[in-house]
Length: 508
Image 1 (tube, rainbow, N blue to C red):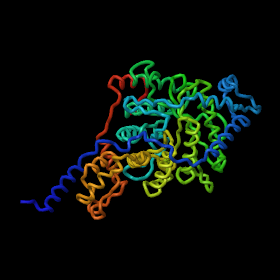
Image 2: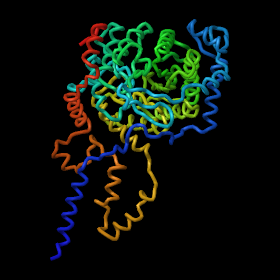
Image 3: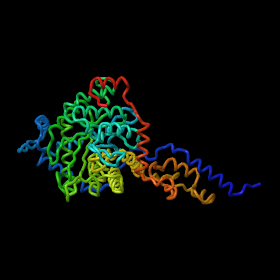
């Protein structure tokens, strides 16, 4: 007897549901997708900004140049312009651009987590030096602590879309500067095996902390052979001058083979022109000055060209991390760096929002997707930062991790092939069941092409209400609780930990 048609469909429906419930095996939106689709500047505009930057370097030059760097620059072909300013001739700058490192690895202590800087790939990571943390219980800001840094480190260690980790907060409960730098480095070594970054307050702190890294790497000199930490340095202070302490750190980091992000952080209307074009010209000149400095000291040394355009609200003078100007300026900065063939670093998701609210989502989404589409190789500040970089949030880390997956999926784009065009599948569906649910073609696409968010709620309104009407922030808080209660990595062996504690003042 022929089975009723409705029963066949019910059985097929159950099978389809079971099939769709199988976890997706392939990440359709992995870090390292290709950027560069968005170009806010024309070729002629890139050339005009670049020409102005080179003119600034050659005719106005850089001020407050430390003696050691002055001598090295003069020997390399730079000019004494008088008034204690040093000029960088166009030919010299262009020769250094040609010879500068274009592609290099940022090593993870776990080699599988190593990422390649340069080329076309885009990676979201962290940055910042937040002195406040959004408290998970009160929902209000309080001073950041060393325990916060440890917790942020192990939290992001469990987040797939954060490709590298820079210490995102300052432990304000550690007043001694050496203890602060040491304990920051220790937190990074203990809590993650991703590529990491830190900063050194002064050059004298570099030697002892490299010893700490050597212990983590397995022995004296091991770290320099495969450096898994980069440093964040701002050797140029806007407008158009060097900072002596930071320059000293540059020399010391090069001595120890520590890759660096040389960060220019001019502010439009304050330390750089308010016009966006003028801002880009000065900021490019300043970041090129860092590139010249690094390559004069050590030709081809790995430096991330971190030209971070920052904006202030010209009505109040307050830093503004969100908004359309930040969006387009960082995208343009990425485009200019890529246009020069340099490994670009820009900043995005520097929301001004204090709470995890609508402003937070709009500002983070706009700035991060634009920076990625413009091809920023490393996108800093993009995880966990709030309150115009004054704050960091645990819940924001997991919300941003999901945002990054959506952005990576956007970058991946649409693959057009005979199989994906699906002529045969369309014919089979229309002449068969009349729909595409449960077909092999659909199931293959489900695994390969779609990202399924774990925090975004796609339930029907009644289902959502019956489950407690949770917001995304509520679900993020639960995710943070789950990770911090279960993910307690100890990426240092007992022997390494004991040796570090015997050598340094590790604060528990």
